[in-house]
Length: 72
Image 1 (cartoon, rainbow, N blue to C red):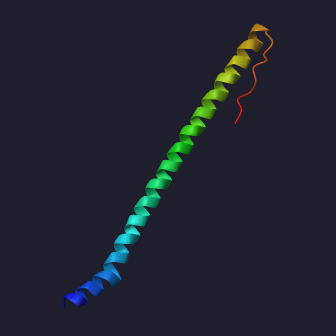
Image 2: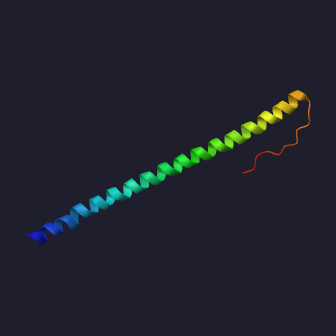
Image 3: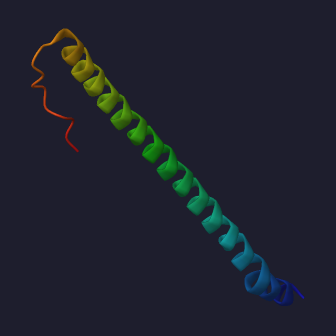
């Protein structure tokens, strides 16, 4: 009786558990990747906005603007 039980567990239950573990890992990885990507974009956007504000201020004041653009 126990060998039948073990066969059923090995055949049906264990693969299902492993499948769920893999899905959880994949979802966690993807969420982290998306979060990092959004954070990176926000940082780049902030750098470009600061650069543009400096450029516009120089333009308003009639100064020459020679600051290089942010590089990525």
